[in-house]
Image (cartoon, rainbow, N blue to C red):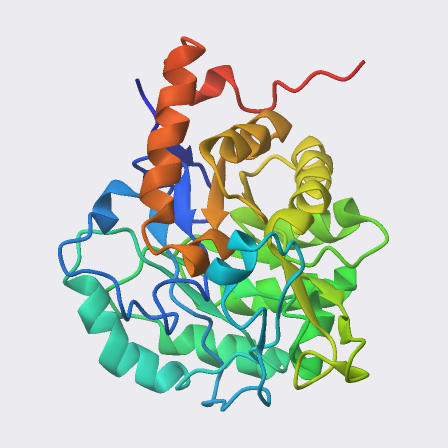
Length: 319
């Protein structure tokens, strides 16, 4: 069975993945940078790994509590379907990322993809400049849509801002550039066209949906910032619809993310038009989830007697 994925590109070298299953940014280990992942974990058996997003300068993040439930694993085991987060892009900043973390990534056999987010067009271009000549990652994903940081969320909400941010990064790198888009727009195809027109080599769809949950016993919001991002199973149908629309509109690979908990969920995204997927919330319930999900996908495709991913991608039929 051939599960390799070739994320073709006209602006940068194509990136070949061993299979379509990746670890989404922010969920790689307990800290987003691999803490808790066993040294012998077969990361190279996955399509790619995305460490947590970096910003120009370090951020402390949002006030606690940042998660609801405080344990996604325990919450889901108890039947909770509302999974919220409000991290606020806690990270050490791009300079430390390039000087201290990237060299460690270079020592792994895994495909590493660096995620970054800027507050201004100048920052996008400056941050991309810091990545020049640095080994350790095979592509750059632009977090254009984090809903928890006011000064970074707007770039994926309007086509001209998306275009400007992608173009700023494209000027500074020859690596593949992936644009991670927001679900909170009237027409995802306008934003998709803007990103691709500016040089994006792939689209990641989507980020979380703004959400609010209130504890009726206390009358207080359950997150320290009040609003947060809705992730997990509840996000999957929303993200999948956007993946389908975008994949029909542009001629670059689309990477689906949102609520993938099983191999069948991966297959859903592939049928909707995704070339690959990123596993997020499932990692917060079990650090071995991506490997289990990949195994389940392989078993499912074997059951369907599918030998190549091209036989399933974009093959959903509507009544």
